[in-house]
Amino acid sequence: MKIDILTLFPESFSYLSSSILKRAQESGAIEIELHDIREFSKDKHKKCDDYPFGGGAGMLMTPQPVFDAIKHVQRDSSTIILPSPGGSTFDVQTAKSLAEKEHLIFVCGHYEGIDQRIIDIFKPMEISIGDYVLTGGELPAMVMVDAISRFVDGVISADSLTEESFSCGGLEYPQYTRPAEFMGHKVPEVLLSGNHAEIEKWRKAMSLEKTKALRPDLLKKKDDPTK
Ligand code: ADE
Image (cartoon, rainbow, N blue to C red):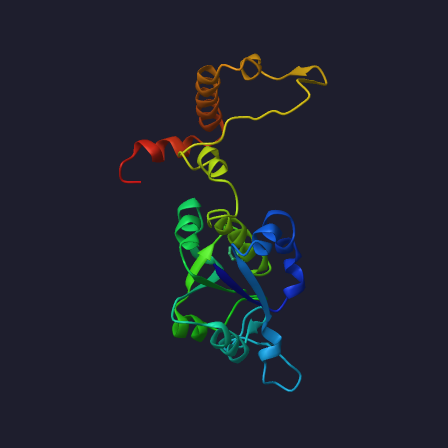
């Protein structure tokens, strides 16, 4: 999968070149390319923002540099994503379905946002990562790229995906590694027993208990055939 990220702040994306996503790029499972929107500005000072018509707080990104940056990377197969607090909420289903796409373009707004004509022209998917407002689309783009990449073949093991939170509608069971006792806290006996059927039973029970305590809404969703 190819992911192009258009931003005024390419330096803020260093996270994407570390750890698992670094390996995913080295293996060719995903290719991520950053593009500085400012380089597309035709303004002699490379200006990319201006005051909103009609007044109001803050600055808006002007349409020309964003339009040219999108045109530079867009193909027939592209899915354009605009991180926006006003978009539909990102979740595991969205991540899975975007992981099937061949080419994603993230357009990161900054300041008070992007001129509406960019949305009217390109009709991007507007996606929010939660009900709060961030200073720009960079962090949401990173969050989405990370979550989507995990579902691209070859990025992480298939086992990790089936066992984790949300994949079965609930939260993942607690996990332990060595030592078997830490600060007086012991690893549950069943996990040391080697009895796989019992371990499986314990994990299911713990997963349910944790979901009930922390995210009961997920259980309601699971029981409701309309969700
Ligand atoms: N840009 C600013 N806030 C955002 C949010 N919550 N989700 C996606 N993009 C945003």
